[in-house]
Image 1 (cartoon, each protein chain N blue to C red):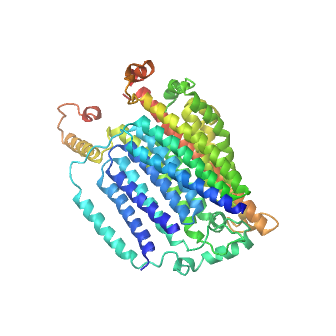
Image 2: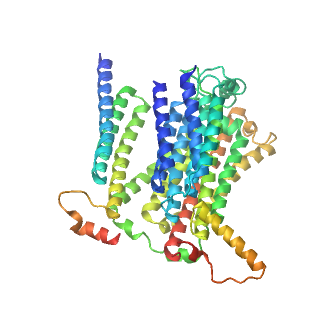
Image 3: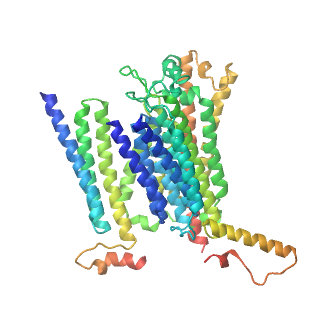
Amino acid sequence: METLIDIVLLSFLVLTALAVAKMHDLFAVVMLSGIYSLLSASLFLDLDAVDVAFTEASVGAGISTLLFLASLKLVGRYEKRTRYRPMLALGVVLATGTLLIYGTLDMPHFGSPDTPVHQHVAPRYLNDSMAEIGVPNVVTSVLASYRGYDTLGETLVIFTAGIGVTSLLRVSRRTKREEQQRVPADMQQQIILRVVAKWMLPLIMVFALYVQFHGDYGPGGGFQAGVIFAAGVILYTMLYGLSTTQKVFPRKMLELFAALGVLLYGGVGITCLLLGGNFLDYNVLRHDPVHGQHLGILLVELGVGITVASVMIMIFFKFTWRTVKHKYFVK
Amino acid sequence: MIELLLDILSWVLLLSGSFFCLTGGIGLMRFPEFFSRIHAASLTDTLGASLILMGLMLQAGITITLAKLIMILILSLIAGTTASHAMAKAALKSGMCPLDQVDRSQQPEIKAYKDKS
Amino acid sequence: MNLIGLYNYWIVVTLMMIGFYVVIAHENLIKKLVGLSIFQTSVFFFYISTGKIHGATAPILDPKYDLYSNPLPHVLILTAIVVGIATTALGLALVVRIQESYGSIEEYEIQSQDTQDQMESQLEAYGFRKKHDLSIQNLDE
């Protein structure tokens, strides 16, 4: 039964990718890429990767589509047709594909438990995780504790992307003075949308907090929670105007919170150093190693969630202020 | 006995839910223009998703999964219908008018949007 | 032969090649970014499908089950997804700035404007004066 779902979803994925390659209307291409992300999230679920499916659905089908649409408003909507036939590119692609398919003939059997992947480190994580860390979700314990240093690097990557977008898309104070009206005029009559968004916003935020703190016992964790929180704020911004939301989330506060999350993560590591252990060795944080691991994972995931939420909101605000600037100052 | 009955009922709900989703997809391809397609897709998708979720609720028994499924059902009812409302409003705003035997392009609301676009 | 496994890997290679083709053959910058994200997601499939075991469950420890899928590829791909969205966001900001500077996001138009600017600055270094004012606004039609 799982095999049938696997085959059908994979075929749909190929059809969607072919449609993305053929279409010239970029709006349709972006929507198709959102559908591609959602199909791949279902496929990840079929392959037993629940955390990855959660992250792909929220990040790929949510934030990525949103950022593409926001930038599509600033550049044109249609792609111009090419003047020549790309034969060399087609030849390179076919040659690489043939070599890769020849390489897959030698791969180990799909789904068998004695492939090289399952040999060295993974049994140790699965067997010893409950005794050493005491958290049922093995992915969270590996992500935040066994491989915590990589996750620190990942948080820094998100922070760097936020800094990069902030420095590329600055908007002057003159533009912000133009956008003084409370609500965009079109949205004032959309009563149904505004009421439903107002109902759903507290539920979205409570769900984000649930995903953040329940990541130890089920799929979830810092990244998914940050993205869901940002999606709630973005929903509110789209219906109530940018100036209204900036009163609650001013620019300085977002930048401060983005840095605060990374500081929390690094601070936990330095505290472990000061208390006598290694960097990011949570065993020394409390009187008992297992309790220390729990506290360490909690603080670290909180830092990741804060950084991801503020950076996603910040990036969306930068793109949207740029559309305001285009409306008033770019002819 | 009661388990067999619940099983049969949940199978009936699941199959009819999938039937409705399938007909919604067929309608999406076969209708001529945007507003009739939205009508087909939103109505049948909401009903189909609700029936599938109710079939799954009968399979779950009285556990925490049942509460989660009820919450998913409420959310999909609210969010799905609001999304199709937003799509129809957006299409009206950009000047599309429904294909009908009555010529609606002179009606005041649609005329206002068409002149603005 | 292991048909379902081979089907899995061949679809991954097909998706990778479609994404690769979109990146190198299409000229619109936003289309290239979408192709890059298709490429990335197909690589994620490859990793996750090496971690699956038949008859196992998700790697959340539970007394009822005793066979779990490998959690290590899941962790690696979680990081990879988030890094992918970070680079996409930065790439989109760059595309917006390119559009404002050059007036278009088609690759050949940007390259021809660059070559033209280069030739003009070389001619000016040799002392030729421009006949008429070639500016960005005049060039983009």
